Every structure is written in structure tokens, then in C-alpha cells.
Length: 548
Ligand SMILES: O=P(O)(O)OC[C@H]1O[C@](O)(CO)[C@@H](O)[C@@H]1O
Image (cartoon, rainbow, N blue to C red; front, side, top):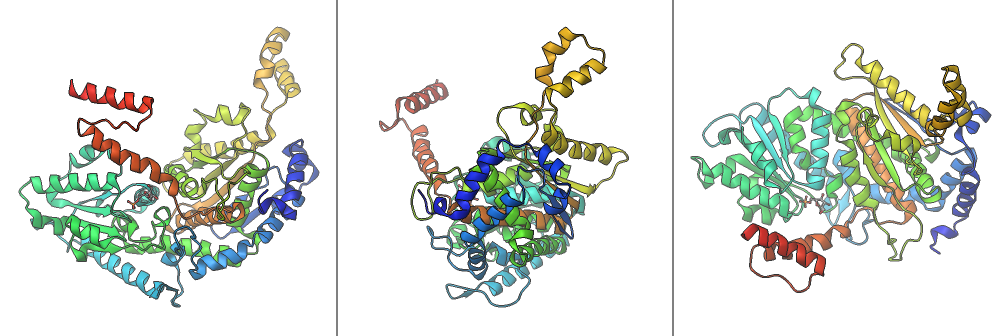
């Protein structure tokens, strides 16, 4: 039994979970008309209603005790102070320093992080302004019109998700494109309409070793130099963002064109650094700064608010309740705002690469369910695709519903239709409809007994499906910054409670290593004897087919 399971609060939650599993949220709402007031948190630009969870005050009290017994606030202080809480890599975790407003020094390994961040932001600002104002010109003297960000995982998902979400705020000084897939189909299609004389490539890679990114960057250099350019053109058309300056320089990128990353920023938490350069080029540096300020506001709330009124902490505790204690295995992210169409993909990496682990920070196997798998889509599209499963499958999927009071692009009648669905779905998921109600309804519609007997069981919705509702005022750079930081801080709290090292990602290494050796086999006549027979036959089939 792990140390967590011997905590009083943990034991209490185990017994409360048994009790609550036989209850229905409809009864909890009937018994307590104050549920919304008790189980909601309002911040200046967003409201969280978490009353539609299988909780009551006793459960929440036990969850807050769990957070206290797990020393969440002490760990939070350590993270913000730059202590090396990423134990397996002996690194600080300071993505919050990238958006911090305080000018006070913050030291890590003799480096004043506050100063390094300020310097990089100043370098970014100067570069962004010069590209957007047409001072930075391509090799042949033409203005840059298109930015192509080459990166994958954290060096792609965050910037691309934000670019998509804030499209409305772009003045279209430049067009921004993202290449992440090593499947050549993507880069070929993106480059096809572009003019090499007007394109700027950003090679974004913390390690500058990621095969997909390096392969795409090499293709981009070939594309550029294949026209009338020579090698010198690379200096005007390539910049890099990396913590591995040496590799970027040997790749051919000028030292001055390299923006720094640091080992204390995890890739999936890096959009606030120069990894967000494409965002800043698209929106202008002021709006990028607003994004950082919004994130900083959420950090301040996370640091200052008592746990009972702390949005990231409450969301983390609810996830632990739903998953570890009530047994949910997945979690849906359902934005009802077109601008957030990449949010689920972004949060998949943020949460699953951080906490998708089964060994605790002391190296022992974890024997309780940890975090759910994250998936999702725009909610309104999901309604016509997978909501059947959410309403009636025998697998309960807790869901975050995220909507905005105001649309960034109002079109008469649209927003009300969208939001009426938003409100209807969480109500339906909670209340459901029982067989007696179904029968009564069918009878009132004049259906025959035979028809009612046949159809009634299929129309029952058991309800009791947990949801959180996040209602934002409006998607803008500041609110989006706060929303992303909300989830980042939530992920941190989950990791602390579940005793997970949230800031490493060893689980991606095995496959990467194997792919490298298989690539050598694909490019030669050899086939390694070390494969299992399935993999060996698949490789042989592929090689025979490509060579016949
Ligand atoms: O920025 P890099 O070093 O190219 O890494 C890209 C992504 O690959 C991963 O290392 C996973 O393989 C992620 O953690 C990271 O965000």
C-alpha cells in the first residue's frame, strides 16, 4: 500500500466513494438548493460551476484535507521558487517565470532567470517588430509574408492552438503555418503556394534532435536553396528556438537567429517562451504580452487563493475524485467555442505526457488509478458524433464544458443556438430521464403500448454523469492565457496528489529508439533478428512491396 493510501483523507474518500456511487445527483440537487453557490468559483473573466459532480460538502472537505495532507501548497511554493522538483531530471520547473510580472531575481544554478527571460522577451519583441514592420527582409530584399513554424509536440501544439484560438486578433501582417508531421504530405502542401523569397522558417525544438523536426527543417532548407538562393539565404530565412544552441548552429542557423529555451521549461509548457514566436509574429508583441499577463493572473490566483476557492486546485481534486475514487478512465474536453478547436489536442499532451505514468516519484509501482485519458472535440460537433456514448454507454466519462458568454465573431442567432446546446447538454447529462418518464411521454404522444414496450428501455438516460462548466467572458489573449494556465496548474496539483513526476516523459523514449534502428533497416537490405515475428513480417512485407 502506498503512503497516499494510508492517509486519513484517502481512507475517508474511499468510503465516501462507496456511499456516493449509489446516489444520484438529482437527489443531491433536490436536497440542497445552494449547490451552485457552494460549488462554483467566479474569477474576473471566468466562472467555474462544478456542482454537477457526484460531490457534497463532505466529499469536498475530504478532498481539501487530501490536498493538505499531500502538502500541495508547500509543493506549489517550491515550484514557484525554482526548486528542482523535476526529480528524475534534477531540474527546476519554471514555466511560470516566463510570464511572471515581478522583477525580483529568481536564481537557478547561478542564473538569474528573471533577467534571462526579460532578455529573451526583448529579443523577441525586436525581431517580431522588425518582421511585421517590413524591416527584416528576405535574401532578395522582399518583405516576409509567410511564417512556417517547424516543430512537434510542445514545440507545435501550444503555439498552433493559440494561433487558431486568436485568429480574430491577427492583423494578417503575416500568414502563419505549422508543420509538425514527418509525413511529407504536410510540408509539401504547406510550401506549395508559398514564395521562397518571402518565407521565414522557425525551427522550434528544445532539444534540436527530434527526428521529425530535423527532417522537416532539412526539407525546408532544400526547398529554399533550390530556387535561385545560395546557402547564405538561410540567415535571412531561418531562425531557431532551442536549448541546444550548438546543434542549431551546426545545422546552419546563425547564432544571432537563435532564441533561447531553458531546461527548466518543459516542452508542453513552453508556449510562453520564444516557442511562442509564431504567435507573436501573427498577433504582434503586445497581444503576446497580454497572453502572458492572463497566464500570470491565473498563477497569482493559484498562489493566493485558499484551496477551497482555488480553481486549478479544485479542478485537480475533482479529477482525482472522479478517476481515482469513482473509477472514471477518461475525461472529455468539450469546447463550445470554435476558436478552441485545438484545445483537446493541446490538453492531451499537457495532461497525458505529464501524468500518464504508473510509477510514483519514489520509484514504486502505483496501485491506484491515476489520470484519465483525455480526448475531445468541439462540443457542438461532438453532439452529432459521440455524445450518444456520453449519454448512454455504460462507461461514465466526466467532461469539461467550456463556452464563452460573448462570441468573438457574432452572427445573429448563432451564439444563442450554440449556447442553448451548451447549457442543455450538462443538464441532460446530469438529470437523465427514467423509464417511467419515457413511458409517460410516449403515451402522451399517442404511441401504442406495443411501441412503448419496445422502445422505452432504449430511451432511458440514466444521467448522473459528472461535468464541469467553464464559462469565459470572451476569448481574447488575456482570457486564453488564464485558461491555459488554469489547466497547467491543475495538472501540477494532480501530479502532487498522485505522487507522479509530472515534468519528465521517459515513456516516449523506447519507441523513438526503436524507430531510429528500424529506419536504418528500411534504408538497407538488413533486417534485424531482434524483432518479434509480427514486427519482422510487417517490415519484410513493407520492404518487399517498396522494392518490387
Ligand atoms: O522540442 P523538441 O525537443 O523537438 O521536442 C518535441 C516534443 O517531443 C517530446 O520530447 C516527446 O517526444 C515532447 O515532450 C516535446 O514537446
